[in-house]
Image (cartoon, rainbow, N blue to C red):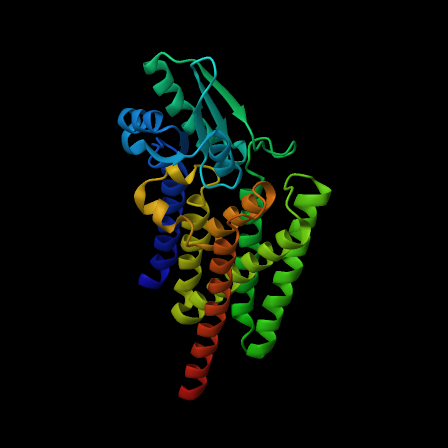
Length: 310
């Protein structure tokens, strides 16, 4: 009976986790530590006192420095006094609607309480064909799914292909997958305005990370490895990536894992390459490379252990 029930139980766990993550995380998002660059110590102190831990205020030397922090993705918005006694809010729409709206609502609440007029400008707008800022998420989701499916199929080829040939297949597929995804999302559809080669490289690393992670879990955990990979990559990884619900709006546990999993790292890399000149792309690329390389090494280690026991 247990053999019959196990697939159903695993399936129920997966669907429960999927709905809980995707629906639960956007059910009632609350801002926490939204990074703001603020001009003037008095304004910065007032924003901290009024908004509390909902914002993370960084004091800027002047309005130009505050705006540069937004352009370089060190902050999601810049607040500075305007000449008429009001406030100027510069946001980066490229950070996504949820994050931009949260920053705008918070500063607007302060301005309303202080009785000051608020003028808002989007200094890093989204591309024309990425109007809701979700193209990077869908590209990352598709590439992650492709790597997952490839590894799932390769798990059954152990008696047909040698390990080195399976590895070559994964790396070759990853390169092709990254190139095709970057071509469709970039030059063909114009929805991801990142430079082609860096984008293709980042997506290739994502495909490799997803494939080797799935193969790793399938190799070490057996049949249970595929559901675990589904939960890790397609469920938790994608839902906490920060694309549909901004990182600053995620609860603490989700915020911690967000950038550590391949989908979250990829979403950051795509956005950074597309809109912020690659200012912080090194961290996400290193994360993706580590998942791919360590996954491959551990798969190789497990294969040697099995061969030694045979």
